[in-house]
Amino acid sequence: MGFLTKLFRDKKTKSEPTQPMTTEYFIDIDPISNSFSIAFKDFYQNHFVDAFELSRGDVDTYFYDAMTTEEKEIAKRLIRQNLKLRQAHLFKAAGILKDAEALPILYEQLNSNSDLSWRLTIGQAIWRLNRDEIYGDLLKQLKKYPSDTMREAHFDQVTDLKNEESIEMLFDYLNDKSGLVRTMTISKLNYILAGQYEEKPKFDKDYFLDKQNDKELKRELLDKLKNIDD
Image (cartoon, rainbow, N blue to C red):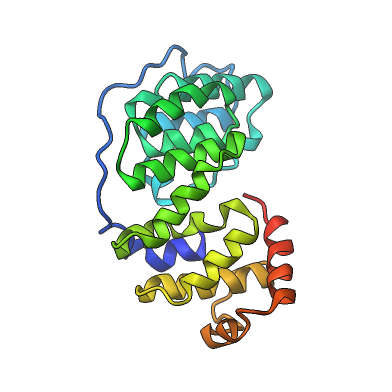
């Protein structure tokens, strides 16, 4: 479980709720078949049986990489044919699995939702598939959003773009009115520089504020951010 997840789990549970549609999944396979690997069965368990721990970030998602090529195609299809149920973990999976065939459904869901939290989740999946700049626009909306809990819940998406704008947004968040967002920003900047989360960050808020116009530091941050795996 990541440091940021630990840091704001309790606060995150209080964020503004967005209600998923509830219905049964459409499953056209036998998920317990011996023909499937342990990785695929773990994928299935965490997406279609009990997604609670996955949604909290408490699951080792090794299965996305460990499934066979054939299993990944089956996984994509299962996710795709259930996307209209509007569940966040399914949207995220479509992006992680790089399922380009899911794009029409993702755009349909994006355009039919006005709630920023849902749009950020769907937009992230679309960004992972085709780098649509609409995601950057959504992240700008997040920065200006009045609700602290919204910015706290989606803060970790700020660096998804992995460009100069991501770095500038991080420096802007150093002055966010939410103390939790400021703390997460300092942790994120230190993480990018060190390559790992540390119990006690090496650099504090004042250090980064003093470096707001330091092009060399921002270039270093950007170079290191680009090398961090999603």
